[in-house]
Length: 157
Image (cartoon, rainbow, N blue to C red; front, side, top):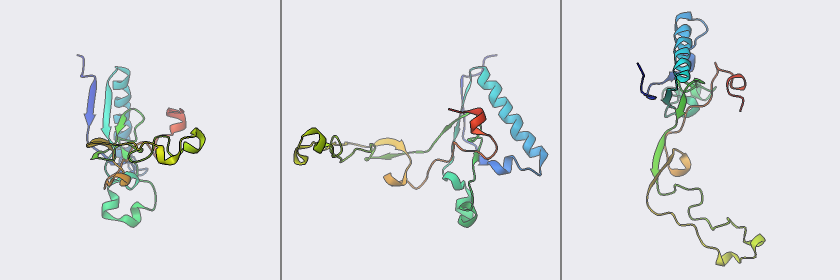
């Protein structure tokens, strides 16, 4: 049978818990899942995975900030090279970096336009954007890095 071409996972765990060096059963489970993700990709199926809400500290940041800040705590399966990781989003009225900035961002000295004549880039309404403390977000993205998978080998671009 033909599976749906897009699958979505909202599950995540600390990568080190899925791939512990002293627990072969857990490690084998993680590797088997990644193998299945790869096989689905070969069939043309895209797997979208949530990156988590806590950034590089993973959920550990909520339990023990000292430990969470002592090293990176990648989230799996967001760290798998065989999935597409989707980060958190939020609504904001500052949805573009240029909101409130002049067109050309101060390049009037090079363009010959006097600074007082520059138009200000206006943003109207609320839009969805990647979560960021800059926009008042309290969560962040946690995908795209791994302690198990070598990015240089699997995704050298």
